[in-house]
Every structure is written in C-alpha cells, then in structure tokens.
Image 1 (tube, rainbow, N blue to C red):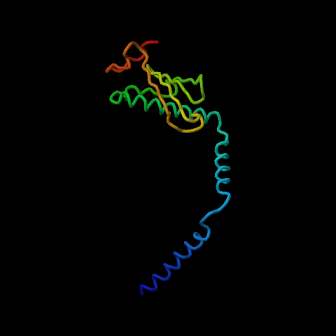
Image 2 (image 1 turned 30 degrees about the vertical axis):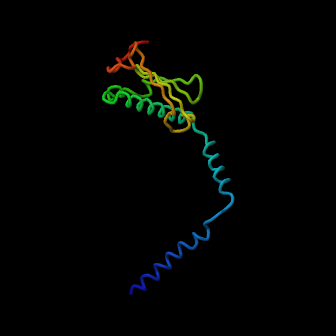
Length: 148
C-alpha cells in the first residue's frame, strides 16, 4: 500500500524538478535584460502631479520623524497640524537638498536621489529651532510663531 503512494509522489516530484534542473544554470543575456528593464523603469515618465506628491510625501515623512525623535512626549501637539498647507520648502542649491519650515522648525534634508522620483528617507538632516538663544537646548518646547 505504501509503495502505491510513494511511486506517484516520486513521479510527480520528478516531473516538476526535471524541467527546472534542465533550464537552470548559466545563461547569457541576463545582465543585458536586467539593464534594459532597469532603464525602462528609470525612464518611465511620471506626471508632474505624481512627482509633486512623491516629493511632498517624502518631506512630510521626514519632518514627522525628525519632530518625533526630538519631542517624543509632545509630538502629538506638534504634528497635529502637519500637512502640505502648513509646511513650506525650497531647494535653491540642489535637487537633492531641501530646506523645510514648519512652525518654529527649519530643517535641512539631503537625499541620496531625487526625492521627486524615489520614495526615500533623507541621508542627512540638520534640525534648527527658530526663536532666541538656547531654544534648541531648552527643556521647554518652542512656542509657535516665535522669532522671525
């Protein structure tokens, strides 16, 4: 009885593994196919609206994380109003470097690739608080609207 079950199982396994083992192994042209596919993906045109949304999503995420790391206990208060209408940004020097202002915070974010095209986190950030001497080192969170 066991032999009747084992033989079909062995035949079934051989039927699936034999073609795979014949087709597996070295084959020329895979690198060329990889590069062509990568180039097609890279050159796919994104609409200006899609590029803008990707950029704003990257910047919003970066600001949210930067504030959360620095003001963990008060982060709900600071992040409650964070959206594209309350955040201002520019990139005057490079397409990979953005300066973002939200409330009393100004942050410089450097990206490894264009943040309009790729979903990513910044590789470098410098976080400043606007308003008076020592505001960055104070235990009290900054007040809104101070120092401009």
